[in-house]
Image (cartoon, rainbow over all chains, first blue to last red; front, side, top):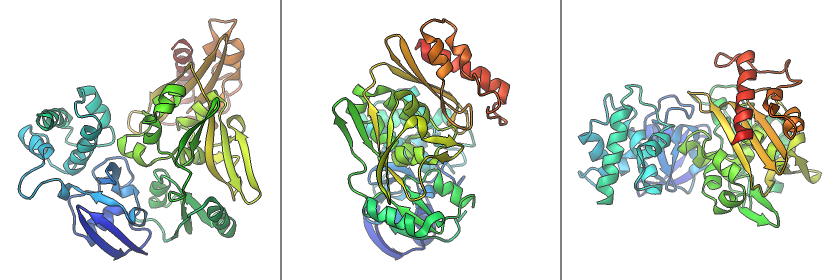
Length: 154
Length: 268
């Protein structure tokens, strides 16, 4: 089925099989491998991207469902070589260990901060319920998002 | 994981979706938020040959006031419900329930109509539609009908929807005094037990999810409420043979938890 999708500002047109997920389409057709596939059943959040500005799990969306949508992936966060403040904060605060969950964490963090620029620690933890870090590095992930919020509000 | 092959059709109207359901029968599934269906298809627990996407149907994602009632389009996401000023002020029990469904990403895609039609025995909304006496508005080849919430849930993943029917909207009365108490399954964030309670003067309506295969109105609690300080002890009366059991909560624990959560809801 023919789809047209705008990803990180660039529009792509492809013929995709209906059973291919958005996550697979990003990774395998477009080589945008920053979007990770963990559980593949909408539990772990490592595939989180933004669809028309709202975070979504790309493993549980079919590519055909996002025909005509605007998608932002982790590759669209930095401005050239300049990291996004959330990425910078993860780097500064040791917000990643193995790094597998990080793209999803950053994309969810961006959604949390968009709707609530000054979240409490509790609100951040509630907001991260759909993202698993199996290194269990949650403490520094929360700290990173708090620091990102400070930077983005400055 | 990749689902079995299927044909994907984007329906542009309710009548088109119904026509497709009629044509494909058992081989077709409606795709709403997809957050239960797509994982089930990946795990090959579900193998529809035709997927009918109803997300593009206009008029199914609005939240409107209709006198003393609030009409919620079936395609409204949990996030739409959480963020609706109207629901927060006139039907707060629903907004506060939706806030704890899944996670941010799931709430951005999952829909109220999809959740009710799926009828997961551990879903949150069933308790709330039961306690609120909401009505499920459906449409099929023989026209529109309204199903009271109390007649909608028939069993695990089973509802009163006919094969050619889809949910178009859910009609709630405004509710001033209601609350939902949820005991979270710590990994999935589904309810191990969820209790919705709507109070009106000396009377109370109590909806329970997660306890029996079918969500239910705890009528024994409701009957005992005005005269007894111990109404919550009746939370599972008559359901002793229908209690669910899994490795998170066996029957005895679930029955106990139901009483505790009903008590919390009655006292909230």
